[in-house]
Length: 292
Image 1: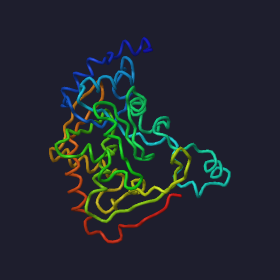
Image 2 (image 1 turned 90 degrees about the horizontal axis):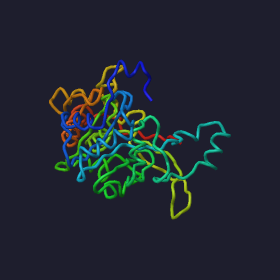
Image 3 (image 1 turned 60 degrees about the vertical axis):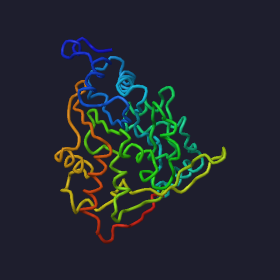
């Protein structure tokens, strides 16, 4: 509950206000919107994360989809190099990834986990790059998320970015560098890139199996961004800022948060061009490393 000081200094943020603000920032009915949100930045929301997701669903309507990246909360990257008792405990006891029960990573925020657990929600089968979705066709949207190149062609990210699909990316108080759809642009850009392999337990025919997963190396950088981005600048943030400067996307206010809304296809196309212009012929950028 808000304290007396909060009630004196701030106005409550209601579902109705959020829906109206989402309309003003340009979110359209029928959109498939990928959300990155800081709940705290929205102000004191009456009803918290439940109200935010309800407002998003109300705005996109029965023909729309609300989705968010929902990476697994306990992915043990690099566990082969851990102390033996930690490595052995994970190898023996880490549950298999289960889209129905494995929670989203805390760093993805309370809204992502609220979407994952919303009635009727679906969650894709890739542990590290998975998405959770609610709305029309959510099951089909999440289906078939393979374990190699989880950001690439044929994945839910590609579905959001497809021309004519009505896809959008919405930042609600989240930084520009948090847009995970830009990893799809990295995956499909025609340029040498870095890949990585790691191992995770998943369910196979009802049994727990450790499997190798090949992924774009988004953790250390799919490209040598130090050649194109100044020190201290997040590469994906630089791409997004350049897109805004070029007229791709718009800025507004939702609740008390600074919001940005981007048409997914246009943002992806801009990012692909940005990457290909800088890294299309970069030698030595196809390195592969193992995280386990």
